[in-house]
Length: 192
Image 1 (cartoon, rainbow, N blue to C red):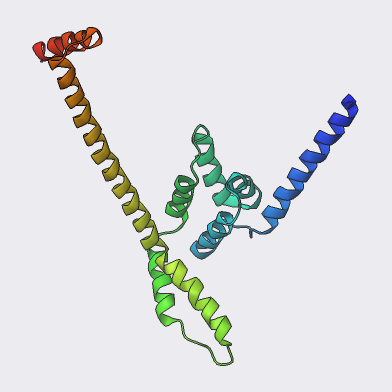
Image 2 (cartoon, rainbow, N blue to C red):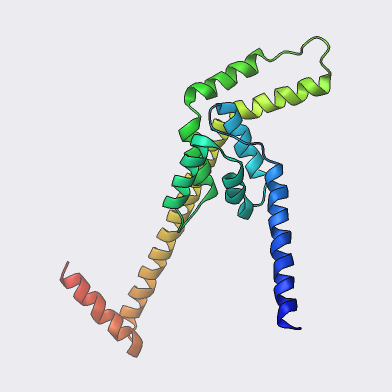
């Protein structure tokens, strides 16, 4: 293919990617961070997008203090941008514990309005329940991480014990390779 054809193909591919990103951005409502409920909704909408599009769509749809706070975090974490850490930072910055308690109160007061369809009431109740339970879900995620860390520590301990047994075996049954290990362990024990 000629060089101009490659350039044209690259242009069309970039144009398709740009259009796809704009289509994704249209799915997310703008947010300025003023209302804690809109912040949570904004983050839920972002989570529906592909991971690689979230920050780009955030840049296009966030406004005001939400945009400034998010971009400062992104600039400080360019080497290792983590979506959950970014989301937690935004929630801590814009959603207070009072807002979470307000969501629980809204859930408790949620009743079916006269003339409201059961489907509409169910949808409204489900959204309030999700919003009210989100901090508990985040605590559960934190607990899951702690469990994983404990499992890793246990596995590390088992590996360390196995290594000790292997080293002990090599000390008792010296070969050409294990003589160096024996000498190293002897010197290590002598200086401790």
